[in-house]
Length: 322
Length: 285
Image 1 (cartoon, each protein chain N blue to C red):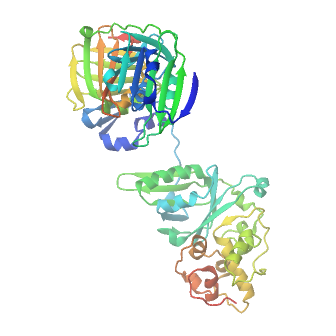
Image 2 (image 1 turned 135 degrees about the vertical axis):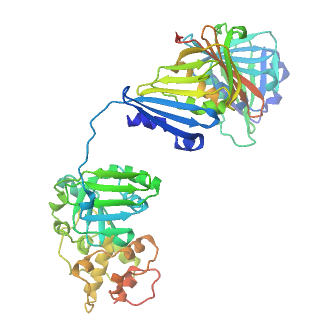
């Protein structure tokens, strides 16, 4: 029936120009719903659509009891999902205290070696609200997410996201004075991420350690970009099986960079928690890839200045990285 | 059909002697003034051309139930010479349109294709001389003996209901007509709903009502309530004519036959007409 209704409201542009009023009437006896569009110049469009009563699924959820709550402008998520191929069915969202990762979900472990893996990291300060009480990782349908993002973007309203454990639905909510939309998406109940032979995901919290991508081609690219850096092996971090394909990822590469610096400059003191230092650098890294320079975060300020120089190859004051 | 390309031979240097052989010569500085209007009736391959000293009439028919006519008066042409009272032939309209657009048909301002259309009479091909930018193309299209166009016997004295609407108001409804509906029903009445288009599709029905006092309604002359259905597949092609037109007159006669007349302004602002005649699918009182 939604296609029939879509036909009534087919051309949004012309609707905005010509329709003055829309009247919707439901006739239960005749199983009919009538849309009457009062248009300019006295033109009246009447659409009588018949419908069948059907059982609607009632999703059982209590979003207020969910462990993790976020709120963001739709643009943030739109810009995130655009990096995934249109054919991708499912996406996995992993959480830590101050980060949210989006990864494409690969069903079959055997396909892992052939698949292109994409991963994006969003920092907590990119959200209007970011509250994590349980570090979990849920997998749900990306296509549905894309659909609701189109709607949310058109309303301009922030999206609230409620995540819980794998198996519990994720709820995305758009609210204003005239509407409340709750998009409830089922999640995989036994998140295969937990089964993956990948240490960074095997345990709840940890974000991937930087050495994941030591062998990435992208490392050498970064090295080439900053000739003051001498490439060297990293001795820090747990050894992890390298991903078979070079992976585009915002965070781990620079993290590996940073780790490399740490290994070379052994006199450095790491004040942060290992999880944090292993954690991906945030926007600073993004700026390396995307050419803009952002002020260092509070985290970064605890780092030796030298590492800042490396990451912000374009505009920071030069202090030699040694 | 055969094509011959030659360069730097403007149409005007065609020798007068050549003209002696033609029973019909029609020239246009801008071939689009012909091709655009022909596009409004191209729902079938073949078209019947009938030329009189008044001008050119091109007819396309479908299943003996639908007829579309395009009228291009003699005054539209820069040259219109006819040696007989009536010159008729039949050609493949698709091929003709392809030839008229042979220079690509893109509308660069100031650049147009000039056309000289010549017909030698029975048995001769239709010869088109097309020129753009100094390049001349000669196309010769085979002609056939013209079929007799159906006479729908639609005369104004028999007209029961007539409205003239500004095309703007009909364009959108026509383009969004529910194509799952087999018929388009037209109701015309001196009382509510005055003028109504209805479709009956898979998911339900839709009605488009035009009140008689709408500012889009230029003329409203309905004498009796009539509801007629016409096959959607027959009427849908008329959307092209509607798109080109600025005004449309809708008339039904006592038999329920439908006449749609479209007023089309060409590139130079001159007026041409396109009309569609359609038999009713069934009578619904």
